[in-house]
Amino acid sequence: MASSTLAVNKVAIIGGGIAGLTLAIALKRQGIEVSVHEKYSHYQSHPTGFLIWSYAIKILQDLAVPVDAFGAPLEVFRMHGRQGRFVVDMPIGEISRLNGADSYEVNRLRLSQTLAAMVGDDLRLGDECVSVDSTPQQAMVTFADGRRLQADVVIACDGANSVVRQFLHPDVALNMLGSGGWIAVIDQIPPGLPLGYQMDFWLPGCKAGVAQLGHGETRWYAAFTEMQASATVSKKQQILSRLNPIPDLIQHCLDLTNEDQMVYTQAGDLLALSSWYRDRVLMIGDAAHATSPYAGMGACAAIADAAALAELIGSGRPVPEIFECFQQARKPVADAVIQDSRQSLDRSTSAGVRAWIRDLMFKNIPEPKMQEIVQAMVSGH
Ligand SMILES: Cc1cc2nc3c(=O)[nH]c(=O)nc-3n(C[C@H](O)[C@H](O)[C@H](O)COP(=O)(O)OP(=O)(O)OC[C@H]3O[C@@H](n4cnc5c(N)ncnc54)[C@H](O)[C@@H]3O)c2cc1C
Image (cartoon, rainbow, N blue to C red):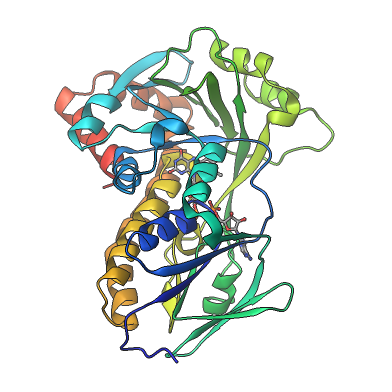
């Protein structure tokens, strides 16, 4: 039987997403036994994409993850303002490299497949966790088919709608923000989109963006502040009716995209949960600190969680100390990301005089201030 003072030898990870797979890779490198239990028997059928900042790419590269297999470095984040016109270029590539790694535009499906291949047979697909239990000495997982698994610790990486969170916080639900939109990956490059550029459009009530992912692919998204998708109106029509005039680049993306490539998501977050662990069960990634996507930080925070936790587990300290140290180190950062994402949504979709002032400020931003802003983005703090 495990004891609270003994080192962790066997880790059960619930969820084979970004946090779960990165944690498994980091623990396996230290010779710690892991099993990753993923609910679905396959990965998403529609690829989506996102931006992974320098600090998280550095972690993946240190784990020997071949990041060029699923993405392309980002050089410039080009912001367009309330009328769709150019406002400012943010020098992402230059400042990322000063932090030790490029920031990358990433195909999420390829990222998952690459991480899954590295985890190998320790990833069990089709293994749905329905509940967990824990004492100070051991943790137990129950699966949908009735099987039970005992481990030294259970790490919940089961995402924004975490089942394990019910064990720790039965009354907490995801806080829906009312915003939502579509994201798509297409295997074509729209005219006017150079490699290495993310073109972002900060329009009244809408944030849209597009970037190449390398490998001949492009990702684009369009999200709206007040959004409930209609099942009867076409997805493109719902975008077009809200974006008038529509930036040429987003129109080109719509022209190159089939409706069934467009994935709808609704933004929600979890502001400042009181605790991320109980006994031998700990939550990381979106399970602990789901955030809206508007600061582009959720996956980066999940990767940083995984690396920090693997290091603490590898230190051989007692479990209560590991979990408490982890929470103390990561919770303030994650809580700040959630707040920042909310502010980012508000800032990027504002209208009227607020949007006019924002555009003017960004247009005239002094270089040292711009470097400070970009440094905070690429380094995660
Ligand atoms: C539209 C959109 C755009 C985004 N853009 C960015 C961005 O640009 N940059 C960025 O850093 N982040 C971005 N994010 C956030 C990012 O996707 C998440 O923060 C990240 O995926 C969290 O990783 P995770 O491993 O914690 O959760 P997930 O990636 O959600 O993985 C959870 C896994 O657990 C599995 N699971 C769930 N329940 C169970 C169960 N009961 N049993 C077993 N397995 C289970 C799921 O199937 C899934 O595979 C974006 C999110 C969205 C929605």
